[in-house]
Length: 415
Picture (tube, rainbow, N blue to C red):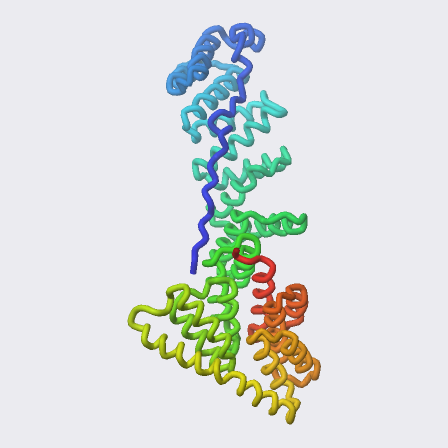
């Protein structure tokens, strides 16, 4: 089972240079006097600010430590000290100290408006960087609510995930994916990776499969398809009769790559009475280099010889099947012979015969017949009719799910 890695989202550049500039950046002495900052404190903070501008953040923090030693500071003076501490610590990469200082700044009541929103943003980012996820959730949620800016939402979702609140993360990212789809936009790989990872953590097999289906639809990759098909075959109630149809889908999307899978596909196609389909598979196996070397080479050659013989005998087999059908008018025989025609490229004969067999209404497995009619349309390059047919497949034995995957493969090819 592939584990989908949550992509690494680096903190935005603004985190290190937020520059919520204190009012004392220019004209320090005058500003402090107007706001009742003592001369002694004004001198210390001016020196700290000079260090910040020179990117000497450790020197700035040392000056802030000197400011801490001054007793009897007013509320406004404490605010200025904490703001300077936050700026210096932020520049130094000490986000823990910076975050605590910025919280003190917000609690001081001396900052409002856009500056307050910027500090809320910085707090969310810094607590995320410090892996203090509950606090990150608090401040990132507040920032999103106050600003209406969704650019930091990936941090919020990851904060839920990393704090092991997988259910909340799953609900949130599900809503985001649904919103993207409703608006006609493509959900990102990050969103779908998060969705699948949350489902895995919650042991939600259906949710995981649905997430991977979206991945193969929007961002198809061979390993995702392989995982999806392997899971489908292992589901309780999945019919073994559909093994050949799964291998057909694997071949169609290019994830039939191993010698055992090719061997299985060829043998099943021969047993089902479709030697030309088996020949196409064995030709592909040799062309790709999967067959023709190693310990199994002689067995593969024997199989190739058998396929060649049965292809040669196929016209006789078709004639025999036609004669039997003329006598019996059996629905299943119609579908089987119709698909046989399809495998040899005679779509004009094969597709109507399959349709007639289905229309008679007495098939033992009508959904399987509809699935094969859809495959016939795919091979005849009639995609729209194939998609319409796949929608009618309702079988609980795996046919409906397989038809759905064929629809995805037809509309979202790998290449």
